[in-house]
Amino acid sequence: MSTAFAHPVTVWIVGATLGLLLLAAAVIGLLSVTGRASPLLRRELWLRLGSWCILLPLMLGPVLLGRVWTIGAVTLLGLACLREYDRATGLFREYLIVGVVVLGILLVNFAALDHWYGFFTALWPLTVGVIAIASLPLDRPAGYVQRTALGIFAFMLFGAGLAHLGYMANDPGYRPIVLLLLTAVALNDVAAFTFGKLIGGRKLLPATSPNKTLSGALGALVTTSVVVALLAGAIFAGTPMGHPALLLLFGAIVSIAGQCGDLMLSSIKRDLGIKDMGVLLPGHGGVLDRFNSLLLVAPAAFHFIGYYVGFGLAGPTRLITGG
Amino acid sequence: MDFRLRPARDLGLAPGERLRSHAREAGLGSLALRSLWRGGVGAYLRLAHRLEVTGQQNLPAGPPFILVANHCSHLDTLALGSILHGEAGRRAHALAAGDVFFRTGATALFAAYAVNALPVWRKRTKAGEIAMLRERLVEDRLVYILFPEGTRSRDGAMAPFQPGIGTLVAGLPVPVVPCRLEGCHAAWPADRRLPRPGKIRLTIGRPLDFAGLPNARAGWVEAASACEAAVRALG
Image 1 (tube, rainbow over the protein chains, first blue to last red):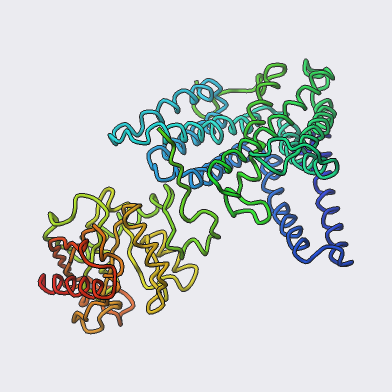
Image 2 (image 1 turned 120 degrees about the vertical axis):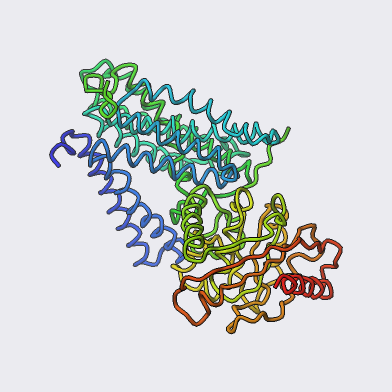
């Protein structure tokens, strides 16, 4: 327990998250008691809060518990995202391709668990190569580009990309960084929604996502950049990343990558003509509807921090395979 | 070249609803679970029932097609399912009584994931459900396993076929393969809780074609009669 909460930023983030949940419960409770919200809205709000009460322990718990738990949770998240994506796009009918993508997700997370960066990076071109040849023996060229492209896209997002989040756990000081990313993308969503509602104005990309506004996007960019820069300042003080300009740039990258992940999923859904990717999380939709922002943030943040500071560079490597 | 993105037919259904839906489509996870089940059932049928199959050459080269047979035991579905391999095995759905196999969550889970069954609600099947089953048979290239008597025979004698089989296939270019099962009643009659070992014989007949029949009452009855006669002739 003392290790889990060793860094003050970990304590701040977990404390603030719990505080926000309690505050939300109090506000919704007040709305219910005073009858100021319609029964439908109240039900929707309680449903969302209920989902968060289950989701947050599932998200923050593994990070606090340790390295293996974190990588395990990222693996399960990748597989859950793949399931929703393959059913929405129709890729699930291509058993061979899906099988290769599942194998790729398991292997890339194994490489993270093994702390073997060479294998971790090698798996991107290798898995893409196997996806490209997996369906050749079927002798069914019709639809080849579609199934191969969908498979590669899936591996990039839910395997190679997302696994960066788990790989961070190889650094002894990973907890505040991963918690910061998990909560920053949620803050980013909330800020975009709030600024959009408060200011309104021009739509961002109306054909892709009719509810998003330019003011919301800019408001989220400023809010997330500042909050992330402040917290990251406490994490990276005394390292080459400790410069205010770099910290703000890091915050901006998290915000922009998060919003782009959201817009990417909106584009997928618009193209398919569906509203939600799944029904697993009441009030949210599917797992992907909740975690879309994280997909691009994980590799972007990893390589930014990696460039200036690195992850687990002093620790032992190839913990399982040896060598 | 255009992408043809076809979301799962069951997208957006809640888990319980999906289990009982005719739109349910299996993914890799379901396929893996079913392969385990099929492997176990195949070994059981060989060891405990010395399953003997004749006429395997009469099975169409690939889906879609329908297997129809006489029905007196739960072993019937298992025996018919065990003769399908490769693509036909992956795409096979047993049409099972909804009030028996899909009544509770646990039985529905088993029926959906192990047997890959689709529910038939006896005497209250809606026209839309039949239309969906016909559409999926052709578009998704499925195999249906069906017992047109409508229920298990209590004395082992074959009852007349209901016209339901006709509603699925009349006017469609989908072969119907008549099959005859012997020994299932002795091994696991309807009044026994568990099966007992005993020889089972399965004879597969030549496929029947109902593409020329009208998709109306007269066509349904004619298809059902032809199926019944073909199954009786194998006895």
